Image 1: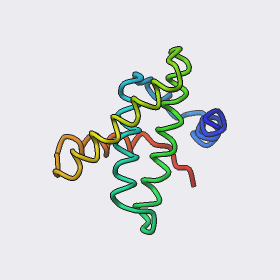
Image 2: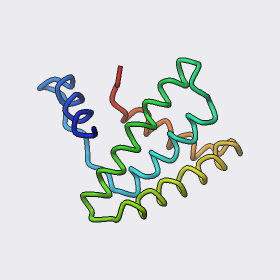
Image 3: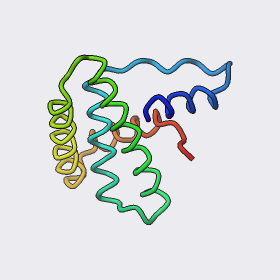
Image 4: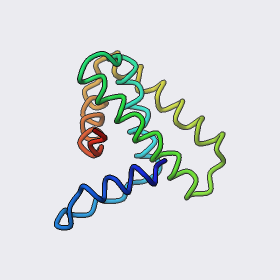
Length: 114
């Protein structure tokens, strides 16, 4: 499924668009955790909630793909995302400005999934 998302992103990006910079597994997991947490906290009814759900899906799939590429066992990758989500829920509930800024950077890097 990630390959489909990646292919769709590349297809719509246009040939003149700069290539996205690769990010580390840890950053990908952090984005997954932040997006998942924000999606849970916002709910799926609003426009923002739907966008957060899409971001959570994208980053979760990206983190799973990155874990696979790195040879990480699936259970370890799932545990990494769970820890990242729990930490992000705590930080976002506490109005942590750094976590909010990281979330916005992740959202800016999320392709439009429609």
